[in-house]
Image (cartoon, rainbow, N blue to C red; front, side):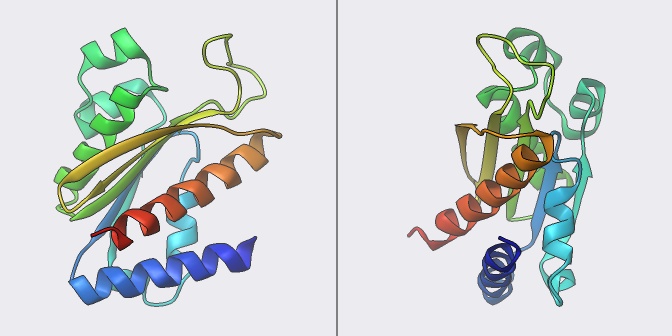
Length: 162
């Protein structure tokens, strides 16, 4: 799995560098794992500008600009929240690309509506924003790994779209 992530990140870096674009991240449930994967690849400083671990709702609100009303109405693990997070990351880091993740890695914290393994991932690519819901299986570390992989693969897919 590590080789797959390294290949994805290397490809992301090639595309971003060729376009002269920067990437930023806003992570909740992965706790900086995506930033770690990005910076494991030599040369990432050319296109990865930085990221934020926005674990608490107050950080999502105060530093990423997620409206309090969004968090109150939809919760931290929602389409609306990750879209606000990804837009805030792109804006605050002055990056053409961003990704954001928020989810329930477990083992507790789930509900019938949002069980453990529920993760929302948001992407911003050249001003276009999208989000997708995932339901991952496994323990906490497995859910974090699956989230990082899905976020990076999703970004690569979006960068390859016309």
